[in-house]
Image (cartoon, rainbow, N blue to C red; front, side, top):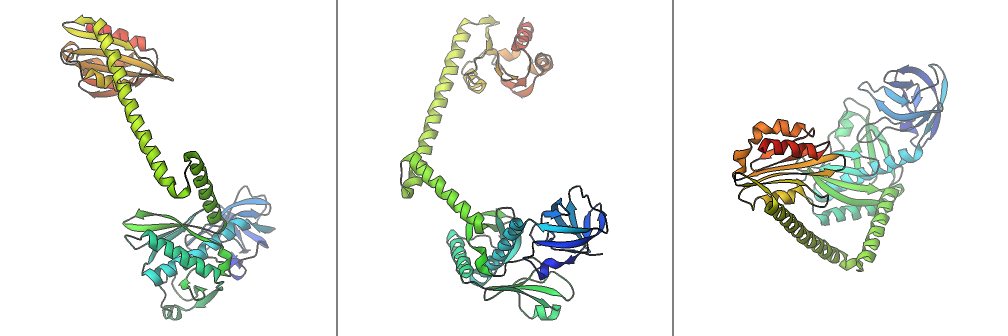
Length: 394
């Protein structure tokens, strides 16, 4: 038995008495319901049923509506009270109506078709068939929708046969089969076949805001916010801009320029710092090479590296030495980072491909590389790695 969809007749009804028909693995089936099931890009309703939490509402291909109730305490045959999470529902009604207006105006003013839509918790997305939409067009669309929102157009439903619905010349093909085609009319703005829920007047949308775009499947997907969500997003953006203006001591009109200069300066400072760190690593390595023991004419350096030095910088410094056998390691929290360099004739002293397993086993390490540098991470005591390296050379 299918739950009777009272939500079509009374979309603003927030509570309803219903009878539990059955409780299945797919969810609770009621004799009637005000809970809209997920579909058409619109989320399913939430709330309570019989005092239990309603997590979601869905339907199957047979149009059976399932209420996903958390730990239901009621039984089949009982009367239960449905209570909608109205703020959640109403936000989707606003968003859905705004989407119809935006898609209709995209088509009538720009010749751009809607491919798919999605209404999320905070954003509305419209995937179009356009490969490019300029920022100017997006702002023009935003203005057009907001003008029609304020114009207080009534929104109503009509039920058509397939034949009469086809005669309407809708901007999108009809997706349902048979008669009983539900058509949503936003007066003087858009007419489309749709099974979703909408507000009764465009003024209820409040505000429509363009939030950005992205490329998907070679199409442009537009991103919008609606109503109170849009208002809060704009206020958040204003607060961020004001905070950045204070931080950079710049008026709003100059903020991007000043911030760009600050970012470029920070990047330059970072590059200079990196060069300085590389020079320090090179000097530290040079000192150790000068004091190092020599094996067959190759300096051998075993180095317990300080935390403020980078193994990457040490690896770069190795390349300036024609012959060098280096085993370096440093503690990084619970890990031991290691670096082995076999530069020039050092490769004749140790065949790393054969010695690798025994060396890394000393600190349960993994890693690899290619001549002359090998590196990775392990755990335990670096001294065990140093000892094994020394034994190979001896």
